[in-house]
Length: 316
Image (cartoon, rainbow, N blue to C red; front, side, top):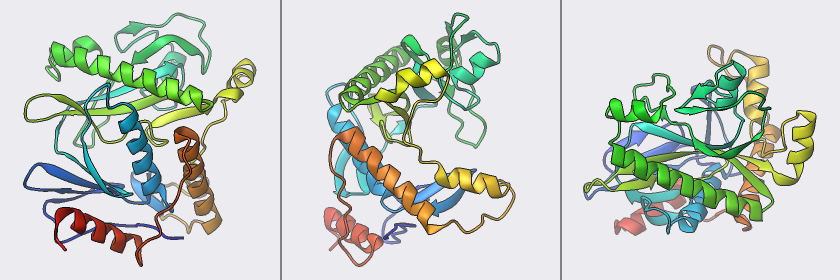
């Protein structure tokens, strides 16, 4: 199975190597973003998952198209199935997570904080007696600081955001309206596909005019939690987790066999990698309602990406 491990194109300027994406900033303000197939966890790369980059890029493409009437996004063109050409933005220093259910496992999730006894968080108050995975009366925004230097993100309230001058009051109002409207559209479309969009992360930036623009990815299986709708009621009653797109085979396999933050990563079985690839493909088809067709053109994925980007830029 073909994988895109890396996408270094020395002919292009201002290269930035991210955990899973390769970026190039062009002089005219465009940014080329290439989604590789790398799988990142434990602050390192574990493996490459066939077609992961295409799944995430094309899932975002579906949602950017579905939400273009709600707010502007950064997309200019898609010269290849794993490539987005977008507007280069000044990324806002607040990470936006919208949650529709009392769920989550991270240290900043409302379920984690709630189970520690906190009832006031993110500028809101939750009542006693809520259960794991319970639907909230209405979706809530749980903003955190966006630490660009590798520090830990911290929960924020709207007052924190404005008092620390992370955003202006007008920016926060606009951003909040966008996030809730995007989430509502996402939940509506997910319900039509037999899914529940539980929570999701958004990233916003501003252009040279200060306009707030949606960036990065949207409603992908990596940035969002989805449950299978018909599994929810029974799971909630019995206190179990609803069925979801479980993509963490590789992560769990590694964690069971070593300390992934310190030890060498053991060789990961091919059948595990292929199973993870299949889950990504299943997620794409369930979320979008479209059949996934891998792009097998070119001798290698990198050769195809190079050819398509250079054709788009007129460099052939």
